[in-house]
Length: 270
Image (cartoon, rainbow, N blue to C red; front, top):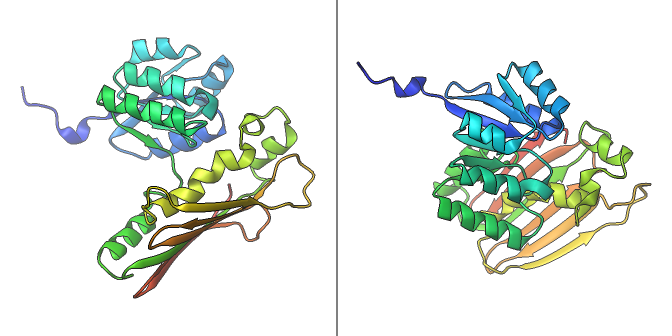
C-alpha cells in the first residue's frame, strides 16, 4: 500500500481559551491546507461550545487535560489571559504537543525563562503570537536588509496604535475587573510585545540602555495609555511609541541605514 502524500497530512490543532482573540486564530488556521482545528476548550463550557458551533469544530471541552488525553493534538494554541499561560503551555508540552502562546508569554522574565527551559527539555517547539511578524511585507524587509539594501542599521522606530473604543479596547474600559486591568503593567503589559518585537531583532545588545515613560493623558480611566521608549545599543538605537490617541490608527516600522531607509505601515484596529 503506498504511503499517504505528505501534502495530505494535516496538523491536528487544539485551542484553549475561547474569547475574542480565539476567532482570529481559528479563522487563520482554517485558511491553511495542512492544518485543522478539531477541538477547543474553555473553563466556561458555553464559550467553548459557541466557538465550536460557529466554526464547525468537532469537539469542545471545559477540561483541558481531558481534551489533551482524548484528542492528542500535534499543536495547542494557548489563547487565554497571560496569568494562565505557563500552566497551560507546560501541560501541553508534557502531553507531547508543540505550542503557540498568545502574547505576553508570561507575567515576568523568570516565568518566561522557566517555560522556555521546559520547551527545550521537552524537545517540542514554541512560538508566540506576535502581530505581523511573519507577514509577507515583513519577510521582504528582512530579505532586503540581509541583501545589503539598507546598509548598516543605525536606528529603528516602531509605532503601535490602539483603539480603546474598538472590539478589544471597549471591554477593558467597561469592566474594572477585566483581566488586562489585573496585569502588573495593565494595558501596556498586554500589548508591549507587539511594539518591541519589531525592534529586538535589530538591537541585539544583551543589556541595552532603556528609558521608558508613560505619559499623562486627559483620559478618565485608571490606567495610562501613552508610552514612549528609547533603547540605546552600542551601534543601533531604537524608539518605540504606543498611542491610544494618535489618528489614524496605524502600526509601523522604520529601519534607518547607512545606504537606505525602509518604512512599513499598516492601518490597524487593535
